[in-house]
Image (cartoon, rainbow, N blue to C red; front, side):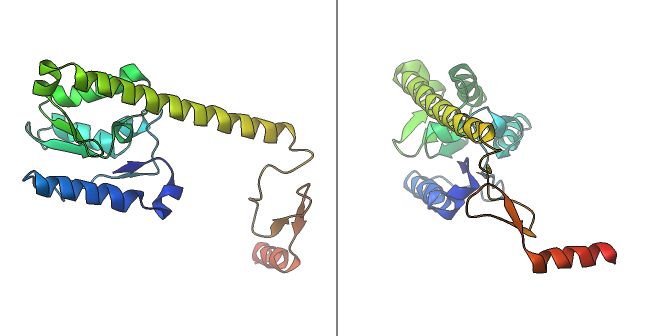
Length: 195
């Protein structure tokens, strides 16, 4: 289970991904391994962080250590849950998992990626290539837009504060140009420093 923003935890992402995995496992006679419960909640796969430091890295290590044996199946909602990294890195990740004898199944379209399916037909690999391309482009566009928004905020920070986040004894003024002191909270902070 992976989603890139903790904000998504408020939605249906976690429940939906778990339900899809349980349904697929039941329909195909698979047993879900509930001991190796790995979730990347709020971990981005855009630059591959999930594969290097997130729960996916733990899963990849478990494959190489033999805890996840050949013939196992990795269920993901869609390939973009596996990776949104650049296409080459994403394909390398997918093929590396497959080469170790672990099948990858995308639950939204029920595509199976294993040694047999990729050697019999080029369609699964082509599908994965386009999925990874779409996922990376989508994330790159979002990243560019966010950078642009924050760049604009930084340029105009003297005129308008970038964010309402501030120490608890302050609050952002209605005009967003400065912060106002909250007297009762400031008094408490002064008291703490005195003590």
